[in-house]
Image (cartoon, rainbow, N blue to C red; front, side, top):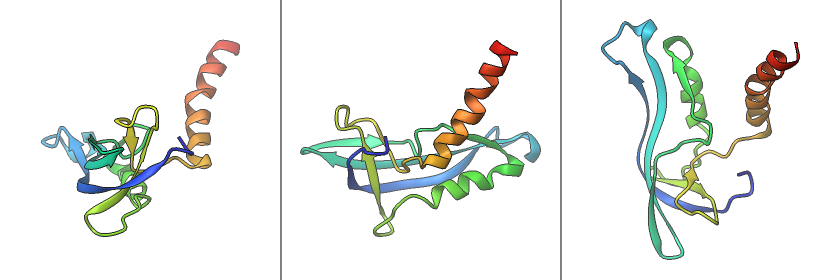
Length: 119
């Protein structure tokens, strides 16, 4: 993913939204969502993923989702750099994970499994 090619696409929407928006603030779960279009080899695609890591956050830590959105490269207000899989161009993201993000996923995703199996 870190070496995927990129193109400049049209950014139609980008926001942090709440599931169960009628719930009490502390019970709401938030997620990033975006809609963008981009072209690869003359073919038009539509994407919705901000990051390869699907994240949800509670009301108290939704600022992490807002922080993630700051890494979207926006050459102009309605455009964004779109990273896509060269073998499957319909697969795309707006934010490529850094080594810190990858390490975080490994630490919190794999370590608990290993502890469960070996401890």
